[in-house]
Image (cartoon, rainbow, N blue to C red; front, side, top):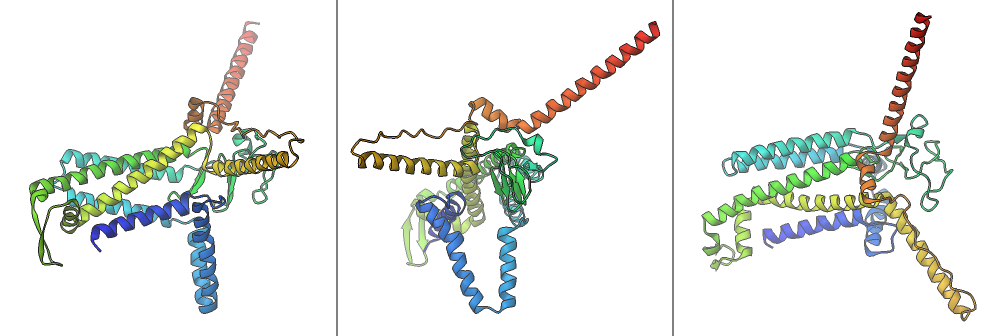
Length: 383
């Protein structure tokens, strides 16, 4: 099996696992949902059962604690992995590109990497919007729609009334305002307050990876032109024969002679595509004024409406038309206002606007009080 084939199979497998384990809804009766349950629940359960029977209790308990820490608790493992992959790839990029990439392009690359690291720090440090008794009023900015959010429910863990569009994160152990998802790469939730920083993180990294890919491709392109690879004849050690130039043969040559460049290029290009797709998906969510968490809730509502319509149609047909066909309206997202307003809620969250308005009102009140006090003192002097 050639190196190119192994690389293609590896990238396809990674994309498949990301789709199944991250993007597929485990509650949906689809191929992705069934595979998600199989890979994340059924197989781990069977492995756990067999390990418990065959391993000593101390060894099993140690593995169980490690698994629990990695999967069910907040930890910096993915953050460290991000830094390792990102900085390691950039170091290889500088090493291989020095003297082969113009200094201006290298300087721009350094600036983009520093900006990416800064956006990573900001996205990791700015909280999502933790709801507690002291902050409950600040984040109470959405009315329950009585479709996916019902008023009056209480979080049994935090012991606070659940606000519309909030969700309790079992990893963080708190309720988050306008909860979107828990991001392991940031080691925290993405919610109302830090959603804009998360989008900027995705956008900046997508552009950086795409720019780096173009510079690395320039190295390979110049190598192909310099050595006239498209007109060359290659010797195959496995068959002992010479072969003409072809896209597959040229790729094999580049992988062998420019392995580091090809490896970083493949990683950067795949990450650029993945992150760009993820960014477009979240921009679409922002334009609809919905969240990743709410897409799952709306999927359940639509499935329920579909079942009710099917039941109503069967009842109508069974009665021979005696019973009128009950009309069931499509569910409507009441939080979807307009594209402009939806995006403004991401860039300028309601909780921050409310806090600024509250601060402004307090300042105006303080100025008015001081003005009234000065006026009173002036009148007293005149009298």
